[in-house]
Length: 266
Length: 262
Image (cartoon, rainbow over all chains, first blue to last red; front, side):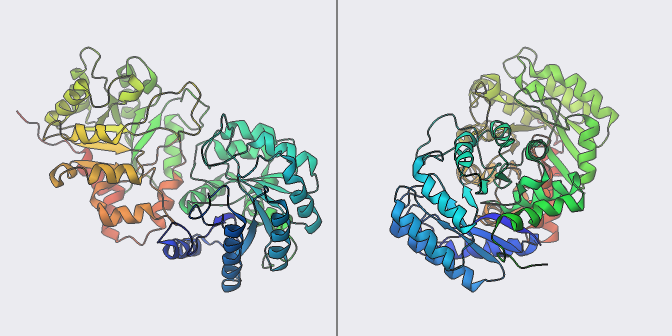
């Protein structure tokens, strides 16, 4: 079994006229790679009617509903993170309850509010209550603010993780841009943060550094926007790790942090 | 046969990179089924005289026949033409120039003169758009990325110019390809190291719009893991002839010496 913990899908109310082709391409490439389950999120309208990283409640609801539909249509291949905007606390909490009750298995926080902001506390309290992980978008080693997002880095996620020790946090896309060398020492001593290997970056030395920082039991495999880089990292890990250790990255760590029954059993 | 046209030897100044020795590169090539690699001297890109790394590169590649040297040339250093003669003598598949790292205009008179001289010498000129993702570069690594306009200018510098461009993404390739004449396009090749696969399918799209004959297998190793290039190809339903062209046939054309002009 191979679990991609960082996938995305599009829908008809996004700027992309090719949304069907992109969704189909992800599933087709997944079959070739051997991905059993794509754990995915949809960030509202992806910018059509509210910004990708500052999605409106209406857009979030539409995107989450579309993802629930995909999950129902592909029960053997797709699971969902419920995406929320912490600036709308009541909506976020209600949306999390609604979507988890409907079968989603995690929470996606992107870049609407800094990770260490108190507005994230009620969301994390609910994650603890429901026993689901939080996938948090991260700009590795952020040196400044970037347009279009209130991105967080590992230091800020670390502060949140310390406040919510019973919640498992997934630090998003270590290869997704920014300086991963600044991230890894920060998360080394934070056992409730796991590192997701997704992103277009395939830097030599990055996987060795991840293993050194957090060990094989805190790495999660994923692709995000580039499936070929995910496959490349998996192939490289086959060279670095024993089959038993690789199995932690492929699926066991994900099966440990997501709710029981989230994935097909062996 | 698989040829990696975009590989490096030697250390990188901005972070520790494993596997920069010839032996480690050959081991990575064995692991990923790469038969031959065009190698550049990585530290030299950052030296005031990049050609100072050429002697070591030639000596090293002589000891390892699967590695072919891409000599560095700085067109504002004295006697730069000697590098072209040396490249021809050692059978180099190309020479490289990294103008933004050298601090010279990427499409200025010296670069156009270099491109023309390479063309007349029958040598391909290799240029990299970038070496690392701009979001992760060292705070002191301020060299600009190679602009697409410079590639368009250089291919027009002389009718004999042949360019191999590495680390370019889809928008860059499209801008140059469709901003050039069909005749100019036939003298341009792109390595695949920075082109996205599925689900965005940039590479598949480019194969349809630009054509398989313009692409070269390249990895950027050891700065990037070479598995990426192979995975990218394995995700496509490529015609075997097209795959062979991308993996080696096009490199033989791009890196082959053409008869020098008058």
